[in-house]
Length: 123
Image (cartoon, helix red, strand yellow):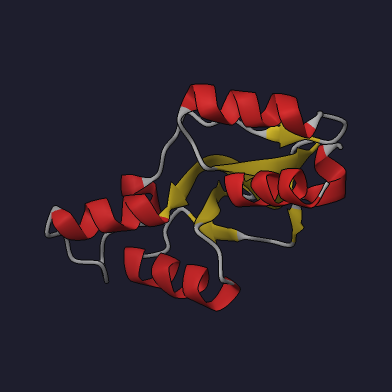
């Protein structure tokens, strides 16, 4: 299968200046474990549930600390046309569970290890 057949569509993003508290709210509302972090409509990172937990563990103020402070900035991305098995290998090698899905320079969704596991289970 290919990325475009299984990824979770939608703008699963936050702004670089969103607070950790707002990030947690968005993740909860969208039932997702990670958001692409955008600055001026360009992806500059990804923030996950683990990053939010790390922020809380470091005793920062979640109302004033921004997403960019705890986001991962060296990110892997997924692109249309990629085979899901190869994508799963890349995710394992990189030690990540979520990848933003890009169409050109635009984030169009997110794909997770859970998504990849689901298609392998259902096939």
